Length: 219
Image 1 (cartoon, one colour):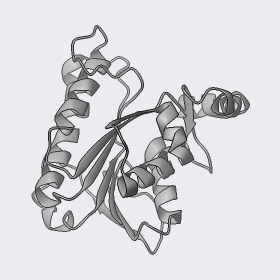
Image 2 (tube, one colour):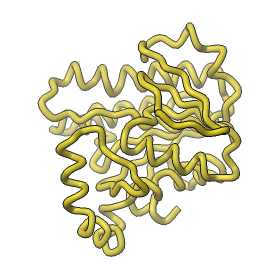
Image 3 (cartoon, one colour):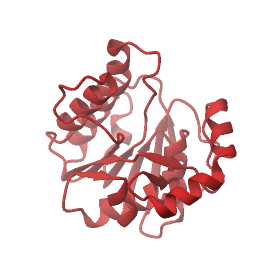
């Protein structure tokens, strides 16, 4: 399986990249991002790309892939709806439309979050935007598309948040997060489980297009 990974330097993306590089079924990984991952591996190739609304200059490098793991995302805290929609919906759909055109047999997996609003009508801005993004991704002509909605995610194996205060919280609460992952699979997963689940779903499929934390852990 040949994989394109967006967001490989973020916390979720770091975990997904690790699992891809370890998995024997993943032949190669193309990481697309604004900055290099800093990793070296025989499977890994990278494209440093600044304009996430226009891929015309690199389209020739984006064809021939079996799966895309889209792990780009931002917090909506302190952000207006127009800006959040641009960074969430516009950027995701620009990449997805390009990949659907170039790779009609691709499986596209998108990381959203627990509480995403599929009706697009709820009171929470971020949930409405995420819901529209999910709904429009599911309309694209991919072989299949899956929406991953984790709740809490525990970083493992040296994976770190790029936000200093968030990383500090993860370090301080590591024992509690480990306990919650064992006792409350509906509300907690790990970067390892997310990565492994993405690979398995891309390879084998899943009975429904939306996976909550409990589904991710079960897979």
